[in-house]
Length: 224
Ligand SMILES: [Mg+2]
Image (cartoon, rainbow, N blue to C red; front, side, top):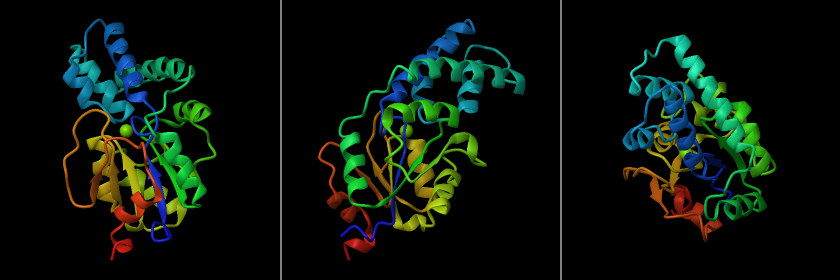
């Protein structure tokens, strides 16, 4: 029934787990550590961003230079702080665990495609579980991070599937842009900032009640 969908590509932060809120706290703490403050608008804008872009934006917002060394050091601080927070366990987004189990049980190939670095993703996977994913692609393992299509392309390459036959599940404008640019159909489950409507973008308020039927409807070839 779902054989038309070659793979489901899961975003992590904000889609599977409520880690965007935790990132938001780490970012605010970094700003405070650097002697400044972060506006709510900037925090929202940084949802789904890469570590370097986040560090650089925080530095500029608190009035500090964002040269390479400063970005590396602020990024390291952010990683360490978030590592500590993640290791206490991550709260699931509503319906996410059940949705992962539904896809797994159907035998559809799966990937985790995250902007989060490998070392932190491994901490998150301790609480999410590794068994849900055939492959995992992290932010420090690709030539460019979301919104660039590189992470989704890489996941499809590892799975040996065509992106156009895949469904990506995303929560942020950045992640949705990445998956769409790679050619995947996107199931958008917004967690924070609004995601603009667009071709092959489908919206759901939450993953509660997600079924294989959702995948069938999502993929154009399966509704012909
Ligand atoms: Mg996300």
